[in-house]
Length: 341
Image (cartoon, rainbow, N blue to C red; front, side):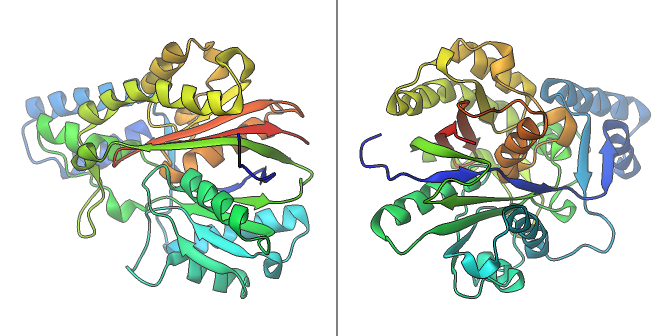
């Protein structure tokens, strides 16, 4: 891609809470709050189970006891990452927090992450773009690296929203469409590095591309004073735009679908991923699905999926990866990465 500096993306670190919730455990929480008749409950339960089947939901991890500040989760993942590379927090020139979860409007959550991490000289700021935040944060760092030669090492951290922003109070079929997507969400925290020099486990960033369709911003939101809400049917329909977006990023890298080893995508629903694979004319094995293992971990989903593929030994030197996420807003963001070590 013309004008793109030589930069590398590290293997991610990822952390999960200890508590794993099954679909039945989640449904028990909804049932405990249900105020209608048994017949009405059977309909609501059937609709929620239908959502779980479409998404492929089985488990999600939630922090439930003695909740810690959001920044602490991002810090824990960042510590793991730096330790794995033998780096010190003071080696970081920038720290970007790429998630929506936060406990205050200002300052940037990244400043708390940096302070607790010990990255006391880092430029620290947030990129808030729903589930696309991590990839847009990487892209923002790439742009900064392109114009500032003093930047050598940047960190992108994420932490997904906590249970306090989810609702188990679902009383009607209409509320299922609005709130059931929140029942598939799980917590996770991740961290990745952007560097000028290749690291032992890293890939070269070959191309990047982002698009916005802001007319659809009302379809999904996490209000500051209320639970996560998503008009899932309408939002998921926008996934039809994703294959074309991904193809543009591939074209910028000089790749076609058969060249890509794995499309490392956001994990809101197995049905969506199946549709994207069909739109790209990709083999099913090119589009890994891990929603059943962790749920929808929002901005942490792409790094978590990449971590999973690395742990499984599926990525090797020379592997071509297309990292992509679509997000509320509506925002699409992709990176083409060629693994080097």
